[in-house]
Length: 110
Length: 112
Image (cartoon, rainbow over all chains, first blue to last red; front, side, top):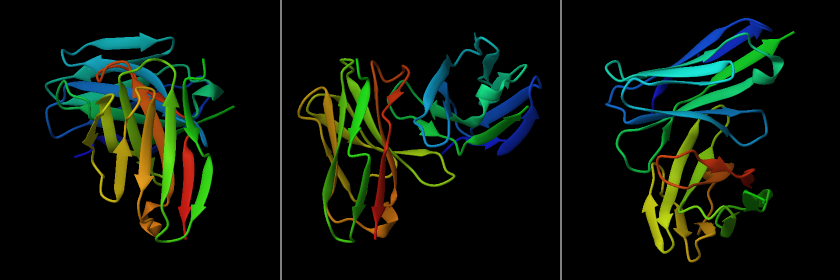
């Protein structure tokens, strides 16, 4: 069963913040976040393992709430380059199968 | 260092034809994956491999076969193509199953 992402789409002005959520009805072991620009391959952003950790990459950070089986991606002071579709991928154990959510389309306007 | 490459980039098939997609990686990764992505949707795992000579089924394996004869190559075969297999196919590789995946540029396949 694939994770559920929300919102499905968001439009921002440069400099605004956004939060993208990824939730699952089943226990999660890890959550991956990827960004895909139109016509290109997905690009890795970060991985979070169960344990409630939080990671950051420049102005993009994420958290993983193991109890809620939910991960959130935080984009602060958005830039035009942040536009694209964001996917979360989840694993339920230490194995190799990554199940992706349906994606969140983010558009940043000047 | 080319990363992950896919051949071909585009292909048009008629229903019932067969074809093989080739994925190659030069990062010495153990794990390789084949995904399909339909318009407006996320990626769905077709098959994956945890090492040379091993393969396993993913979420949507029906109608596809794979082989991993060499560590650096992962082949995806369609024996009898159907219009429902029209999609963009991405190959990916990772050092370990729990590590980041590196994606190839994709193959756009249309089945008429």
